[in-house]
Length: 216
Length: 216
DNA sequence: GCTGCCATTCTTGTATACACGAATATTGAC
DNA sequence: GTCAATATTCGTGTATACAAGAATGGCAGC
Image 1 (cartoon, rainbow over the protein chains, first blue to last red):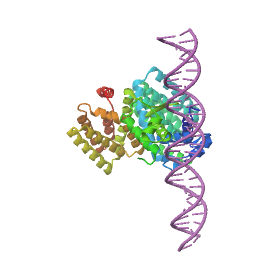
Image 2 (tube, chains in turn orange, green, yellow, brown):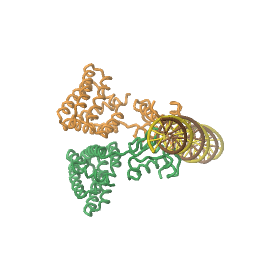
Image 3 (spheres, each protein chain N blue to C red):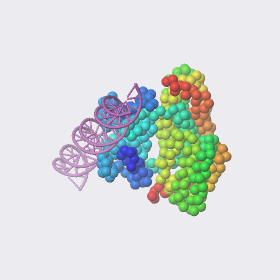
């Protein structure tokens, strides 16, 4: 547990929302949450305020908090922005790459290769995450890294669904190869282009997303 | 005043921070704020929690809240991300432009022209803001628009400082002209490119920023 | 006179109490 | 039986009370 109950609750409720335990549209009753976590309403409210500020829930005055339901279209928009930010991170990484970042990216890339070849979609899910985080860090822009991490976190559940789609694992990994090559070659614009298409949702992948969302 | 005290306080304190009334590094005492606004500590704390979540203040456990001091480097990073997001907004706007957006952009652009020709830097400051917001809206991506608005808001104080720099007014307006042309021509990539350079801080403009920050 | 330890004070973190608006159930009229 | 007006319940919004950790100041020892 974190040092104070408020933060701990914020993380707990955030996780519960992102893992779909609290479904979109669901009402979050302060007293129910308080008794569930064995605390009073005060830290619960503080946690809710923070989740409201980052856009995970909506607090309607005098009418309680509900989990925001982004809907397919908005999720598409979020991926669109994510693609742009990752593209920027990639281009900066290519320009600013140092030995340490190169090492971390290579390591994550190799783990992805193993999981992809093994066809282990769960393992790939985690390794892929580390790969992308390695690129954020390699951008050497703290603010960009934070923005990427935050958006990545929010999109995590949908990413996971996407990996279930047929052939997505090997396709994803081969895209990684190109990205790594571009970054290591110092070709920022190529890295940006490849990451944008890698992260963005084009064509049939959007209907895949919608389909997987409705059946979860 | 907003419907509930918590939100009102959040806006009040946010404005006070962005207008530099609460300086970076300054400690925000809950009781001082409470008595200043004539309320109890509870809504003050809720406001602080929200400001913490959006990264305007830092709450150190048991040690109170302080206004975050971004520092020149981080502000540069924020402009870098802003440039990228505005570039995306511009490219989407060019592709999706409808009559309504065209009208709003044209109107804002004309107001910029008047303020620029009059050399009225305060008027231009507001008109310029409306111009950029018009482009966010024209992107027809609600999420992108929100992200842009939020970051724009945070960078507002520094934008204002930049406009004070010699010749920046006319330079800015002539850049606007190119952006409008590209968007109206449906040239998304050109709009993106122009907006990126328009918003980003290159070369001497970074030292201008640093200089203006130290003397405010 | 300076340094380190302890007591005091001050501020934050959490719980509880109370007030008020919204949602809901109940009762009465038609 | 349906609808509307009203009473009741329920949950949020704010204030206050209490607990506990951090900052501060004083005192003793050197």
